Length: 189
Image 1: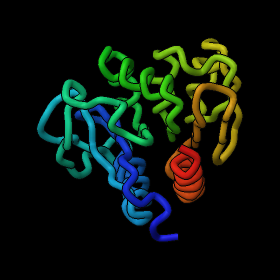
Image 2 (image 1 turned 45 degrees about the vertical axis):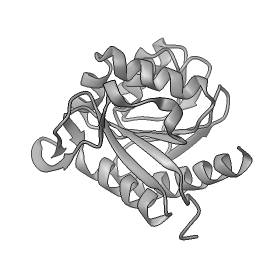
Image 3 (image 1 turned 90 degrees about the vertical axis):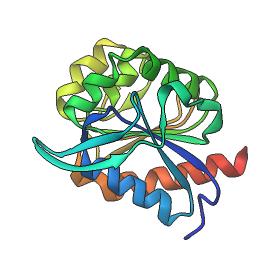
Image 4 (image 1 turned 90 degrees about the horizontal axis):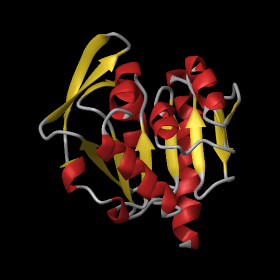
């Protein structure tokens, strides 16, 4: 359906540098195509510099800084991957707090690749089953989560529904799944 996310505000949380471009742009397009309203949130104003693995990609304008963003204003959350993106975000207390408050409110989230590092830092993977880039397996398990090697994983064992995927190759399944999950959540709210 072209309007399954009609009017839903979806926060895309990234660092200002290091997000994997495809993991930002494909989910963003999926939200837009489903008539949702994506907003790019980053620690600092200005732009987000994306990367295509290790090569600089495009820059994207920040819609709102973490200082000015309230998780209560959003219906869903997407955390794209990128090694530097996930690693940097987990060191930003405002990013960790934003994610914790979003989860505590029971709102759905979709996280891909190295994005789960933020969830580990926020203490949000215990007793949850998720996937990620394979190098995060030990971090997730050490934080009390169960890691699976799956194209897409949906976990409802927690305060919210969590959709996770491993890598850019998983984007079609990731986008289709989180769009369905976000749509169902909004209809039951």
